[in-house]
Image 1 (cartoon, chains in turn green, yellow):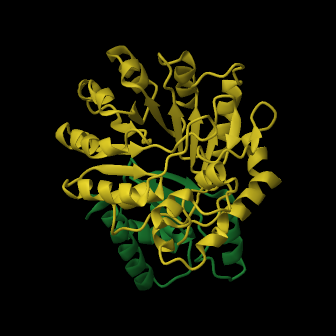
Image 2 (tube, rainbow over the protein chains, first blue to last red):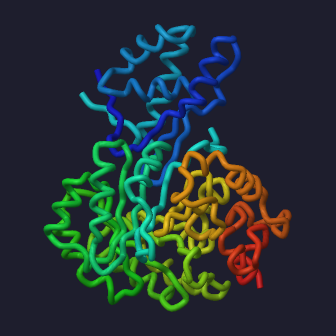
Length: 104
Length: 300
């Protein structure tokens, strides 16, 4: 199983205010998809991630995709298959852009 | 997802030279910077020797997540200073030059740096040297230098604003087209210089980022939205960066810069230049809401 690591050259920051705003929205059953809660910067490319993207990013510490999905299921109320597909697609995008690396 | 308006900048440009008549409290400024958690700090120290101030700033920033990049002249670099910069956690070194003649000696430094931190060239473009850019690119390619930055002009000082006329841009584009510099990492802040290097790729980003993703601190501690926009937002002798970021001056500045210059109208080139350089408009036209003179020269 491939383990996923953040590229150590990526500079990133979690936006506390926006994270609290997103959490409040989720608690009230509102959509938080468009609230950017973190910023990533690598090699001139900047990405902003919503709360789910940020949580996935923070879990890229040597875990496998399956371990990341399992962890997220404890925090977000979503179907496992749907979450797994979303996480896999998101990680592939991060890998393509050089923000994460797949290892053994 | 668009970056939009940020509460805190991602990058701080802090110029330590030319040395001011009255030095600011560098330790205090370091605390201000750390408090707003930017991702990058770009230090500029182009004095005759690397100042102790530079090392003490690096000392204070060591161990923080902040990535510090230093721009300095090649003469300031020795094996001992490289060791010291490495031990202080420097992430990147840009060697400053304003002519091809000044590039000599950079390769030896690059070899001395080894893999300790990223090294590149910062070539300050002006009216007298823009024609040297293809030679600078060739130099980088031939000497394995993978990063070339064309720094923002420091228009809060007395540096004359540089613009490239339409014919000059065409000449430069033609000269650069003969080179394959796809492996070279280019950092270009001027939308019109960008176009000379990247004729088919629109200028990245969402328009002027002054006081949004960036802030600039001049040697005397004055805070500007960007090194090229000499409209002071405050001074760190009397305010903190946090206070300046929350100030009406900063909020009004962003409100103004989010609006494109009226003269741009529905210009078909807007996706290319994104409104141009607002600092250059301010310096040369007297208003940051005017058309970038580089655009006027280009159009005419």
